[in-house]
Image 1 (spheres, rainbow, N blue to C red):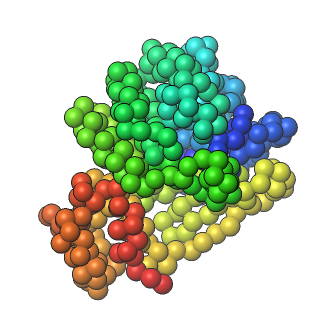
Image 2: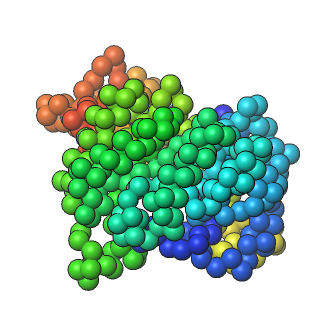
Length: 375
C-alpha cells in the first residue's frame, strides 16, 4: 500500500510561523495545475506495483483551488495508478475558504476527509500568527463541515506566546463540543527565515517558552484521553481508530509519491524531493524533466528513521524486527543506549517492543535522536 501527496503551493497570505513552500501570487496557478497533471502522468510507473490507499492535498492552501480543479487531479491519479476503493482523499483547508457552497461541492466530490487548519479559536492568537481567518469563521466552518463530512480533522497549535493554560483549555473544550473524529495539535516552533523568528529577534513577540509548551501538551493529552481520544502519534489523536491513512503511512515507512514543487517522495531505499520554486518546477515538468533531488539512504539512515517514527507512535519499535533487518549488533546497541531513559521511566520495553512512556512523550524526538546510529 502506498500514498500520493499533492502539494498546492498557494496561500492568501503568509502565516508568521510557516516555512513550507508557497506563493501568495496566483499568477501561474493554471500553469501549475497543468504541471501537476503532467507530473502525475510522468511518474505513473513509479508505483505500478502498489495500491494507492490515500490521496492527500497539502500545501500551501489546497482549499483555494476550485472543486473542479481538485476533482480533475483526483481523476488523473485514478486514471494512472492502482487506487484502492474506497481510498482516503484528504483536503487541507482554511476556515475562510469553507463556505457552505464549497463544503457541499466537496462533499459531492471524491474528497472524503477534511483537515481544517483552525490553530486557535481566539482572535489574539490568530492575529499573532497572521492567519487569514477569524475566530468566528473557525467556528462557522466546523459547524458547516460537520453537516456534510463524517471524517474531519482539526489542527490546533499550543505554546503560542501569550497563550495561557486557561485559554488553551478553552480551545480544547470548544473543539470537543463538536465531537470531531480527529485532532492534530502541534507545538509552535520558531523556524529560521520566518516572520515569527524576525519578530522574536527584534523583541516584538515574546519567544516560545518550551516549559509552557510541555505543560500544554500534557493538558491536551489528559483532556483528550479522558474524552476517549487515542494518542496514536505524538501530535495526533483519533476517536474510534479514525487514524489519518496518509500520515500513518509515513510513520510506518510505506512508499509514497510527492507531486508538486517541494514535494517529497520515498521508495523504501531513497528519498526524492522536487525543486522548491514554482517557475522552475513548471518549466522543468513542461519539458518532461522531473526536477528531483535524490538521497540514497544508508543502513544507519533507515535504522534512525524507524527509531524516530516508532517512538512517536503507539506502535513502538519492534526489537525483533530490528534484529532481523539490521542484525543483533544494532538491537543490542539500541537496548544499551535506551537503558538510561528506561531508568528514568521515559522509555520501557514490553513484549519485545521499545515504547516511549507517557512521561517521555513530549521529549520523544530528542530521545530518539540520542538513540541514532551515526554514519
